[in-house]
Length: 269
Ligand code: MBD
Ligand code: FE
Image (cartoon, rainbow, N blue to C red; front, side, top):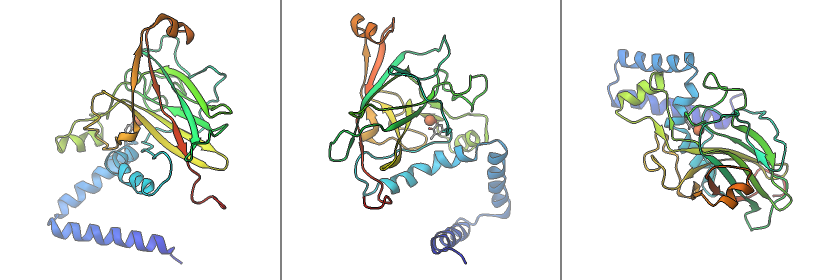
């Protein structure tokens, strides 16, 4: 027997699209080019990219509505489960010996929504390299480059070193790029770090952080920037602070404090 939620939602989707076709007098040729676009997206491995660019932020906002603690952000199409556990502290995301980009130190603290430090949360980070490419998605990058997991300490504090990612450009020549081009839109997302938090009792949250002052914050092609997720990024040039991180060049320091509220679905929460 059909599940009530599936019936309600899928039947309404069908109704909505049927009305849409009538309202716009969508012809059969136009209908077929639309299904061809979806088929091309699937064949190119870009189906999730297409939907994530156009629709994921709306579904994420629905989840954030009424949520306690830090808001969630879109996951995007490039998350991979099973990233390596890092040795540390200090934690450094896997990178090539000559990894391009300005070094980044990202730190903060995880607390409950009432401000009590939360020990032992797992952080799972992934982001683009200096060319705007993700490992295992774009070719020619070592597996798990700029992807890794580690735990916050017993006070919920965490710190990880990586490189500062640039804005991300959606591939122009793929089917998603073709759709954006047809709409006259640009292809960029502002520079961002993706991070998931996991706790055995509190569950899992997906976040994403953007850097204040960066390009495309006001025109993200995925329309996913939310003010709470934009963090200050300070260029540190002080030799002592550089040396303290084992670096030999100026680095970007950014921090974000997570407020982690239990999932409503957790019994007794
Ligand atoms: C990304 O890195 C991303 O986060 C999203 C939402 C879409 C395309 C690339
Ligand atoms: Fe991304």
